[in-house]
Amino acid sequence: MNGALLRFRAGDWGAYAILPVMALATLPAMSFSTWLTLTVAGIAMGMMLFLMAAGLTLIFGLMQVFTFAHGAFITLGAYLAVSVVAVMAGWSAAESWWLNLAVLAAALLVALVASGAAGYVFERVIIRRVYGAHLRQILITVGGLIIAEQLVVALWGANPLPLPKPASLRGSIILGGAAIEKYRILAASLGLLAYAGLHLLLNRTRVGLLVRAGVENLEMVEALGYRIRRLFIGVFVIGTALAGIGGVMWAFYQELVTRSIGGDMTILIFIILIIGGLGSIGGCVTAAVLVGLVTNYVGFLAPKLALGSTIVLMMAILLWRPRGLFPVGAR
Amino acid sequence: MSDGAALLRLAGIHTHIGRYHILHGVDLAVRRGRLTMLLGRNGAGKTTTLRTIMGLWRRSAGEIDFDGRPIGDLETPDIARLGIAYVPETMGIFAQLTVRENLLLATGPQGFDEAQLEAVLALFPALREKWHNAAGSLSGGQKQMLAISRAIIEPRRLLIVDEPTKGLAPAVIQLLIDAFLRLKQSATTILLVEQNFHVARSVGDDVAVMDDGRIVHTGAMADLAADETLQRHLLGLSLASHQ
Image (cartoon, rainbow over all chains, first blue to last red; front, top):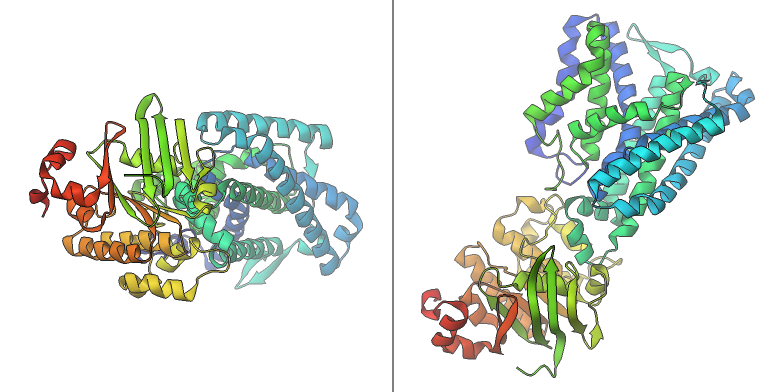
């Protein structure tokens, strides 16, 4: 990584190799078709995790804010998907790719706008008061998560809500003797699209350059004449909007939405951030896919160990690279 | 040193960092078009003075005027936008950005002015060869060249540089001395903190010496360079030992 957040450095070859090594190491333990199914499932899960985690790694990397309320924006996205599908139930049940994709697109758009707007309000009302105060950040954002869950109960009720996938996105296609769920292919594609978008934003725009510089040295960015607070707001809005669309994709994947759907993901998201290297988008996507693969492989090979597999993975990575796979800056 | 033509003026500046009282009433004038050296022993308050000017640490009392305008209450970005460039002791380069990206950050929305860029690269040709390299991969001297280049890639009214030669090889120090001499020819106003007396003597027009958070001497650099007794008194050194 030659640059800050996305490009890979030659010295990081071990970190690049971890994904193919992990995938190929498990191949002898199962049939090829099973391996292919699990690998695609792991990549798809990883890309959905990436959508949820990418915003938080930018928020932490640039702003040094520990926000445990990130899950609230995932939850908001998930419940908005329920509402959109309820309004567009006819299109969702229709046997038409276009109508089904229109339902998904509408859910993503609504979640993107609403989560981004909610993120803007959250930053202006709460986060701006606790910059630099990590303990207060944790307390106030945990409080924010609890309040958000209660608001969800007030708006959508306490019972879990079903969220069936649109008709054309159910089922699998057969590839190399393996059954690959259509939805997983779509989720992986959307995650890749988001990654590409972030890559372009961070590497081809002045705003991206500022974000990358800010992750390294906020003070110097200000000394060059840039108002970093405005950048903070923009990054927070992008981060929460990504969490919202991650919530939509995860909710369709689970096909059941609960008020804790976002909160339940918080620990996993922090594990991804730590494995990837705080503030690194390249690290985030690598770590998310790694977590997705490990969860699926261990879930198949040793189901009883599945629950703790990501924690063990994090410990192993930190023993090897204490600042994560792709650490950014010196902060 | 008369401050009649001062571009930057500090009057009675006090700065606290936490419960520590670092600056105890600093009075300093940086004259337009001159290179003013700010000298002093370690811990005298030189870096704190520069950071206070830039708004990176807030003054607790006193006035800071830039071109007759009070700037003590401005935020750091607003101070920088007045045309004040700052090179911190740590150089402040973005290690994971390329040389080009580091310089680009210091330009306006229109990007590089080709003539200005060529002038800067003529000053530090090594940067041209490292144009697409990560700044973190540069040598210490090249990093300092990049830091200074970034400060002058756009026309600035005042250049503030904190210990640019610290830890650098003699050949690189000479290169930086040449660069400052050429900057002086362009009538750039410069405030330079330096521990290396040879550098100070080579480039300085005016000098202010700090001790214990106060300015204890101001005058012409040439006068201080010629007075070994005064050097011993103010800085605890003799010029002969720094030839």
